[in-house]
Image 1 (cartoon, rainbow, N blue to C red):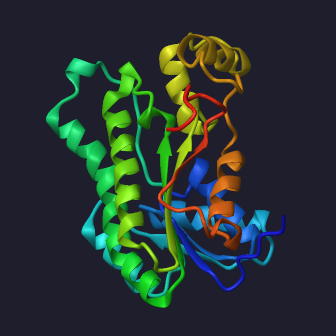
Image 2: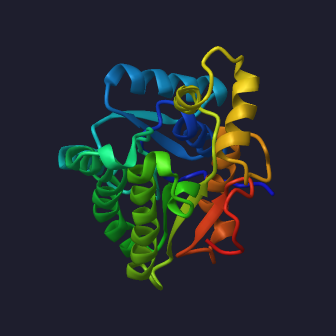
Length: 264
């Protein structure tokens, strides 16, 4: 399968590292012009250079903006007036005792993981519908379906994204725009390495720590290893293409068989 996104412009939020950077690189490798996003100019410029290094000749736009604020969405809309592909990847996660999560922390998770995506969808979906083509995606998580007790605020925010995605897919019905969420399973990123070491012995070498984490905290994974960011990116690139023109309103799983259900 050869995916050609030449002539398409994409925005990947929270793309200075991890899954977001892998998605930006994958889209660029398929020919898309890609806006990489982070809060600081330095981190965003570094990410843009990383994409260019991985994909020589890539057309990459560094877009420094805080997408947890309306001003960030406004900056994106001004810089990318005719966006074709919106990947709402920005998100935070972390462990916390369930009964000790404050109201402010709940609000921070929903502002970052949910409302940032809603604002950007509100900014870009109407133009996509008017032009008759577009792709909107939300990077959700297995935690949206299997809520982990050690981070229920994160899980609840990702569950909300599934509803947001389905609702906006209905709003875009018949327009030529598809809207989907991607349920990512436990994935190997720098942030996840820190999270793993919050739950297992910090003195263990990484490979042993990863296996111990999967055995104790994610035993239902059929893959029995952490997913690599590029594996998530492959699904996002596919959903961004014409090959996925009949896939909309879905919650597509790249979870390594983690969710023990036929449907989400």
